[in-house]
Length: 337
Image 1 (tube, rainbow, N blue to C red):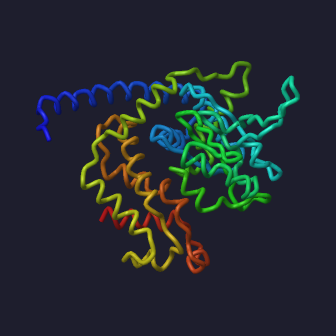
Image 2: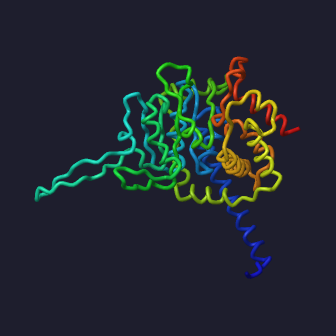
Image 3: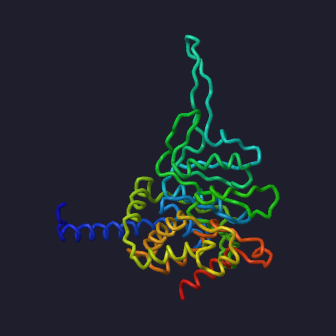
């Protein structure tokens, strides 16, 4: 095996720094364009963008009317992605998402089946109110979210690249909703909780959206540039200290792994995919904030959106009025020491 020339390593490092500076400029332009349309909600915008920059999917949870749909459509425009929207309803069928086969008859009378692609064949799929559909229909997204292709009648169909699912969900306390299966929740890189805007942001919303002219977003980058940034994020170095912090945090959230609070309150905890999600999004957050390597602060800041949908409390904890967020906050506090 040949010995690497030190000069080559320096050049590679310089190339990564140059690419990161260009990516930072593009990300800043994207953020600026989104801010013209989405007022306030900086944390929501940041976490949703981090999921896309990391190459994954995001689940936006909140009551109706908090601009979840608007954020997703704005992202599609600003990032230059081909996007489709599906409104999930109780009577929605899997074929309404994936597509279906129809029978064609040619001039000679010969019959054959032809596949008509469904709305899932898009670079950015908005699954609006995903928990309104039945579990059977929700499961139609499972294969596509993990393997980036679907299988219909035994035939494989690859999805466009990049492929992202941004789903919105109403709180489960509302009537007419179905809880998402645990396996599907695990496919979402982040859960983004969308809360009510603060006073200043709500004032901006009132003034900016009730006049004659309403701001429209424009495209800033295209899908090819987005994929370049996604590849850059995967090349960013991660220190052993950060890797150990990710492993320690994820494992501490599992019952039977030595954490007394977890054993007392948690029914089941996150799998290895949680660690992968933390690793990717911590890198993306570092770049988003103008740094070339993630820190422990990135890991702890993303603990809640990464872990919240990958854990469940036991009956005793729920009876005490605890939430998953409370448990995660306790784990982060212990990790910080």
